[in-house]
Image (cartoon, rainbow, N blue to C red):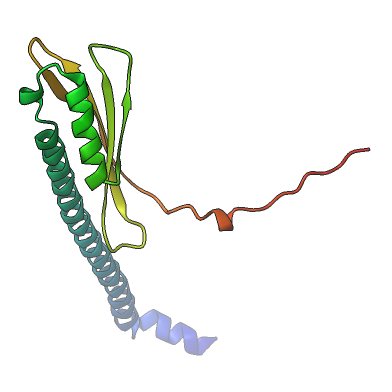
Length: 169
């Protein structure tokens, strides 16, 4: 007991312990700062990659929209609904990701849906577009009703759980 009192009274080695504790604390803060900066860099790279993919896909969707608009040739067709329908059928033959529905409404005779998919990805992003033809004075105008991007896994019906009916007596 006297041995400990002797060292405690003259404070020998106390600064060494204090310096060791400070070094450990500084190392912990340095490691935390390094980990945070690495995580921030990875997140920024992922965000940049996502934006690049988004704008590339959006560009493809705009090309598909322009091709639809060129195929319909609404200024030339005027208000001839049959001619527009024939143009839509021609467009469907060259674009499998498109469908249209004919309505009884004379002001909006067609609802057109299109999808553009990203290629070469396990879970590709898609842009879903809906357009409506609105009647103007001398012709129809293609109006965008919906333009949304989503990313989803493809559903495989074989992965679905199978249930059987239970017979009750």
